[in-house]
Image (cartoon, rainbow, N blue to C red; front, side):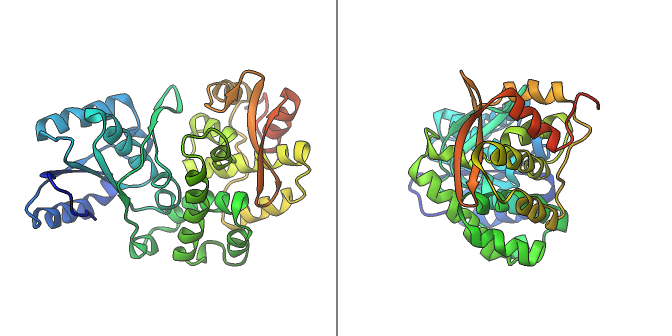
Length: 324
């Protein structure tokens, strides 16, 4: 997990409850190298992405005496690497981070690209761009994941295919959740790494990685719903916008691919006014309206500003209306 680094004396392992055993085993391995390694088990999922939770981690790091020469290891799913990366980017104004994603979602999305964040009122509104030193993905760990965890990650992997790799979309259309995990990770990471390499701070092309996230983030908070499930719903909404403003001809093909993975395509319990309120907080808002990532075709994304009528059509497509 760690490379050689002069001056490193301490390693802080931040982990989710579900991987506590793995984290403690990793800490033992690190201690065998002559380093001090301690483990902090933090709240699960989005509960770790709060200012209160990261504040407690900062105080723990104070107690450890962590320095800028030391390392923070984040082990767990996407929310964990978001939070651990944010802590590493901000503690002492920057400490080396290493990610060990243990979910498909973490491996194909959150651990790749250098985005870190916590939630403050809205999703990911406070964060920093900071690359980890390395990302270590163990395919054997991913192969043993429960099907529901694989399904959640498949939403982000499918998104990568929709914006940049039609063969990944076709793989999911053929095999569904039985798709080879190593090929899925390799293809999805290649799409994201390529985009990030060309636009690290999201001044242009990187916005394409937000396909499905404008409505998805609102649904995630309002439903509430897991991130992967919410992104699936968001992609259905984005597919409708794409058809209306960009002539996207594969709206139904996209929906069928999402359904093939057993992911939801609607969020009928979410009120329209609440969804609009949350989308107004979205980082992708612009002075002239809400920016939406759309598909002109599979593998050909672009960004458009949408009017209220188009936005209403997108929400209606996923069952979000004035009536709960």
